[in-house]
Length: 311
Image (cartoon, rainbow, N blue to C red):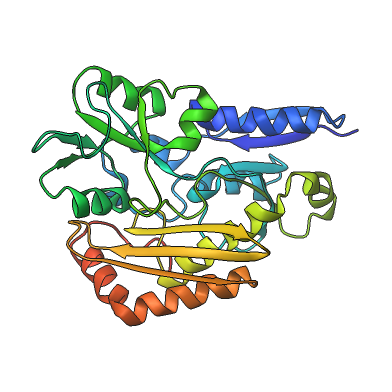
């Protein structure tokens, strides 16, 4: 049996994800080699992600290795993967999803509401910033970059009173000690695709598609399809103030999405359900655009908060 070569970023979380998929493939008798690839997003560590705005900043170099035949599949955090894949690639599997919600971490405080006036909160996400400011406009938001260990260490050293991260990554790494609050999606709508892994292959590679088919989770595929269709409809990448949260209930996909101003002064929210995940995402996106999301996003881009990640 030929060795399968997996392309991955080199961060602690990316390696956990790649090794997790490797273990599942080894259980099925496959030999695995892991190829560590440094991406643009890994090289730019001194600028808030929202100000970088490079399309595919965590995926481009990995896709180049995939296209060149240096690796056979790539393991990504799905929220890092642009909603429209470059020509020549396909999404072979979306894995069973971890809890997609964001969490509040702090050494001293138990919740967002417990933070003192003008407390320092760390996040490089405009989506998180907007929703925090909507409920606590007094809080001071500061950029937060680096891997999970780096971010948690900065919190422990007192650089921030609190930080906001995705629960999924912390849970996978066993670093939930400072998690004080899992934030309800009605308070902080997560990023599209958060908590799911996307397995990317060369378009038309039927052998790899068949090998990876057991990893494709039906509910995760449906919910993330709706969320990513919403994001695509709005023309936004993962660094703009757009949130999407979908669940499967009684055979229907229920999708809630938000588009917000970074200062939290305006948040548009829409909820719909349906059986066609892609169409649902598109419809919710159209409603938000009609209600004013176009103006919000134009203002975000013109103020250089972020560069549009997708056409």
